[in-house]
Length: 152
Image 1 (tube, rainbow, N blue to C red):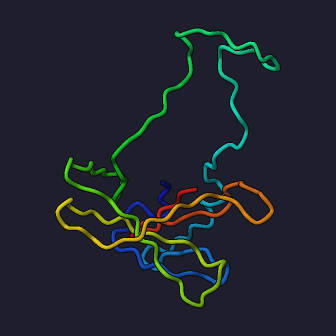
Image 2 (image 1 turned 135 degrees about the vertical axis):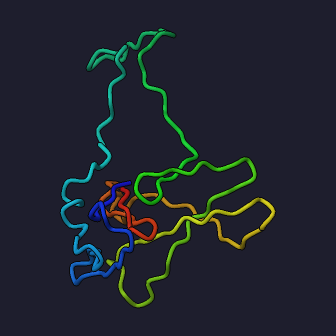
């Protein structure tokens, strides 16, 4: 996630401008500059180090230098602090309704923490990037939490 507020901002006051980009009236900053420089996922496939470019003769090498995926149960909160889920906790993403603000209105979610014994009501959804033309490039940010941190 990418935070776009001033370092000293402790009470964000988020407004959505006519350009559909959030800004903070608390620290007088906008997400606009951060969106321009945000690290977006690279859609180009990476060739494994044990295969030559343009060949289909991969080496059957158990000592391959492929990177292992990194998974974490932590979430960024406040200014870089993290919380780790305990074995009896779960985190739900709450998608906020935008009403009649239009389909170009920014997507905003909050992460809520629950104990396994709380049995919160929720609807399970599945989401994938893509449009009606089959284009699957991630091109719209999702904003998370009180600070509207950016993820792609």
